[in-house]
Length: 208
Image (tube, rainbow, N blue to C red; front, side):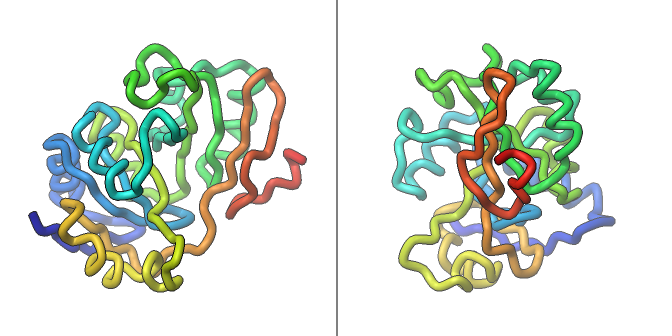
């Protein structure tokens, strides 16, 4: 297996490119793609095989880690998370943007992704190409940042170096130019309160 490296633009990508990515995802594929924060690994949340591959790449266990999803829009979040009025108002104010919001998971979330945690991280990045891909896919994209420990900054921000490192581990690398250095800020919205889990690219001053 050797990945393809495909150029992706902030806007005006062809429908053929979007469909090509979706086809890979629907065949248990793993992709690397840019977001409004950092480059990330992703796959269909419905593919247990692809989720296992991502866990192998990151050397993690699915039952020991919190996974996040990229949803196409606010209306689709309620299919996979329990959204209170308080949570919805917060999501509406800050998304799309560089935030991950932790919410109670709904019964539609595949069991391999909750396993006792019963929560899910929800992202709607301010990056149109990925939202178009998720919309065409028809369900959320599992998302997790690339490994960074022990690496030079260029190794996880330069798409050509990312491709060199992962071309035998993933199916597709989307080249959106250099990526960011900070992951999304993670905000827990359970119990109608806000708790900052991780300060990242998004301004957390309103939540502290």
